[in-house]
Amino acid sequence: MAEHYDADYYDNGETRTAEAREADLAARLPGIVAAAMQAPAQAERLAGIDPAGITSRAALARLPLLRKSDLPALQRAAPPFGGFIAGPPGGFAHLFTSPGPIFEPEGPGPDPWRMARALHAAGFRRGDIVLNTFGYHLTPGGWIMDRGARALGCAVIPAGPGQTEQQLDLIAQYRPAAYCGTPDFLKILLDAAQAAGRPADCLRKALVSGAAFPPSLQTELAGRGVAAFQCYATADLGCIAYETPAREGLVVEEDVILEIVRPGTGDPVPEGEIGEVVVTTLDPHHPILRLALGDLSGVLPGASPCGRTNMRILGWRGRADQTAKVRGMFVRPEQLAEIARRHPELARLRLVVTRAGEQDAMLLRAEASSGDDSLREAVAQSLQAVTKLRGAVEILAPGSLPNDGKVIADERPVGS
Image (cartoon, rainbow, N blue to C red; front, top):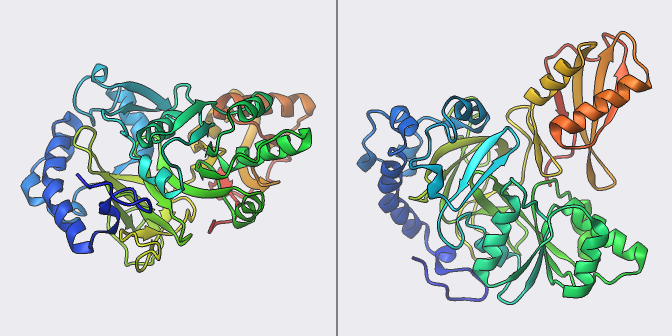
């Protein structure tokens, strides 16, 4: 167990030497692999593997990938977790679902999603009041941040998303110093407070995730007095990497192993090359081995000027598949297929994801031999019902869209 020893760092694990980190990894990996193999699907997937021999990143890289995009089908076939998690679901504290659907349990301990380290790097400290606007209903986002903030000794306002006026009431009454949520909603809150002449200047630090955070929005929030930091996290894994005051890439969380592999394979790419993110969690209670997330990124050479010595990665560089994260929710090709089934009069569909006014925006372009406002409104209702997100709809003549098989076009700028 790492010792908590310095206000600048969460614990001494963040500044240890590369040799010490690799020695710790070698000592822990065999137990993690053995724990994972207690689950029937993992035992089948890793048949013939001796956990005692998995003592390095190179040995880990020889294990097969598990693709996140395959989880919905695997879990439908073997509810609730596809056979990849040992033990009954009643043994966990909370049980969640996220778009896909993918079903996730919450492990034991005060910070099961490993979020406290990222919050600490963003300046959150004991006694801070945190306005947490991630959702608490069914999906784990709100709980992930909540548990991490509580582990740090913060008080949490479980606000959830939306209800801007009520959020402003909470801000005026409790005067939170810190914010968790999407960067888009933080801007919405600040804009609404300014327009209404209501106080929100208490918000001075933020950990944001779930949506693009381009440099223009970073600059705007900083100009309004909010030091906002990014966190790379997922509902099934929790925190993967986080931004530090150095503002140079994202530092990988100490209790995960992150690989960058060539898309379509499990082979690690050379340092600096863009590839698909693959994550292993060093959690014996909820081990996940080589989960391929479908996100593209790359390793940033060298160590962070902030003093943390773990691997750094670039920000998000796109998707290895056509899944897109919009306003904190995944939108998948399967959902576009469901919309097409609901409206057989439509031909090709393409969902275009862009940025508008520092927020994610969706436009569903659909071909139809004939169409009027009623069809457009019906399709818009289906889009919201299926994806849980609002978007515009444009009806086009047959043959207007390219015949290239693409159904989701993510046209947001990368590199943020």
